[in-house]
Length: 276
Image (cartoon, rainbow, N blue to C red; front, side, top):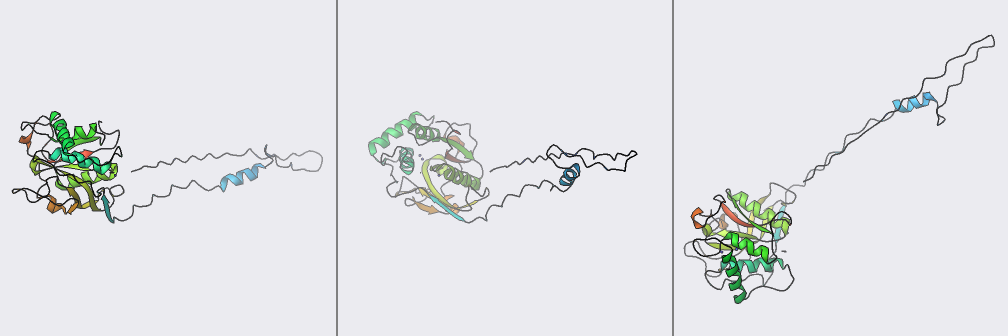
């Protein structure tokens, strides 16, 4: 089988009010009555003025509410450029070709494209050596591990029970990391690369965005499968219902794993959240 990619504000308000001293008292003797002048504060302000200033101070104002997020709009993100696609050179090397395409979509070392047959064979051997598979092939765990080792990662393998949630998870990860997603196709028998997507709403702004299309790279193109259907041309945008014809639940019997049954993704994760 398989570029470059919410906040709580707490405002505390404290107010301290200072009270003035008691005014002066009138003094009376045999001389004409005299009323004592008001005592002054250390700053030269009379207590009455201080009391007036305190009584007219404005109360603390509550924080202004946060502006609501803008309404969801059509959103497009696609990493694909001409030359990123690589075919698999044998019917077994889909994972290795998908690793080459993931490298091309991200170019982590800015060293040109990966496309050679000999390199694809080496990547296939690496992925197979890191897989535990009764069919003696490369499984998603080996796929993810090689991506990490060649500098494209970090990646992890996830299985998601709900189809639409799987698409949202893939799109959200692609937008957050700027790296492609591996799609485990044909119930665990084949590898595609998700290079982009279209949605209603930006995943980085709208948590409940809706995926309306997925850009895919099938390394088996132009051959396809008699059972699963033709291979789409490189960078084809497929509607979710079209993708669902070949992106189906992975069969548990295909390989031993603690992951639950579901739609399987070789998922890019933000640096520091996964294992390199």
